[in-house]
Amino acid sequence: MAVAEPGLTLVTGPGRGGKSRWAEHLAASSSLPVIYLATGPLREGDQGWQQRLSLHRQRRPASWPTWEVAGALSQALDQAEPGQLLLIDSLGTWLAHHLALDAGDWSDCQAELLEALLRCRSDQLIVCEEVGWGVVPATAIGGLFRDRLGELQQQLHQRCQASWLVVHGRAINLLALSQQVPCG
Image (cartoon, rainbow, N blue to C red):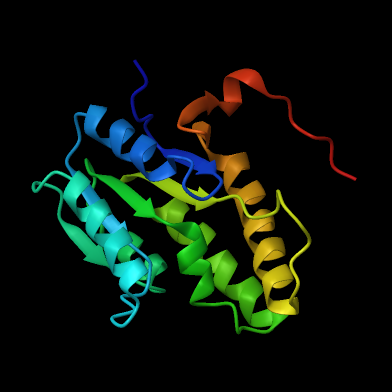
């Protein structure tokens, strides 16, 4: 049975592939108290989004407090205590809060997040979307989102203790079944 590893665990995959359910399973299998860090916007007028949030809330145990952190993930990581497991859902919605940043400010924001993850005294389980599997995005902002998320995921993967790809409701252990792509 898979359990959440100490340190940093990534759970990635396409939309509706089962990422959040797998991350919740890993978190529930941990002996640590879980804190759920929600990075998405509330989008009050979007019924589809509200239904999705409701399903996520219904699946989670009532004992898991939820921190609505939106784009302030780095600050939330600094508030965590040792002996906790932070389930962060998701990296893509966090990035969306910072998409308007120019290249220099984005670089600073990304570095701040990576440093906060290193400083964090809690274990972290991060859900992150895979968006670059389909067609080339039709808009410049879509391409920017894809590129920034892919770059950030590669940096996180270099630091993680466990990494899972979830596709069609199936979880694949990437560290056990993959090889590093050479740089260059």
